Image (cartoon, rainbow, N blue to C red; front, side):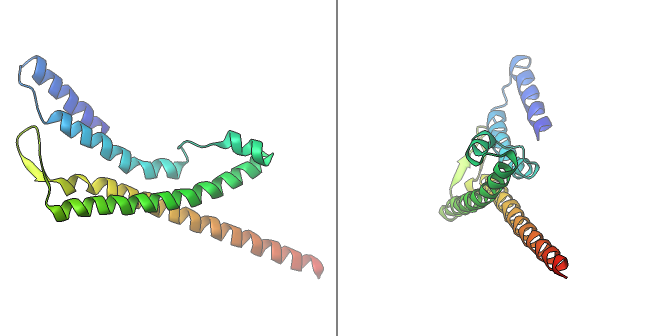
Length: 160
């Protein structure tokens, strides 16, 4: 998408200054592409753990980096799931209200399109982010259950 955005910007600039024929739709297309790329990539960024974290404060509160990481991960997963579900629902409602109202937008190029179509990508992006946090919470719960099971088996094995 980034390459497409750069291409549109380049062609638009060439047409505006060299051919004296501005492409009126290019700014609108770039705005949508930028917003859509944010919504599409936020799940990937969260999966790789490259989003903003507050590890410094958690380490000061808990006293150890390991404990701070565990507490931070639990809080991040729970809060992330709640917020992403809420935002996905809000985005769905936003898209659906626009669809029910039949709102249309006019582009700078002179054609109209249904407003709700532009709202599909944020809704899908937030749904994918919700699924990511749901999966992460399940993995976290399974990890806790497995560690408790291993601790229980090691305690029973040492008693015999």
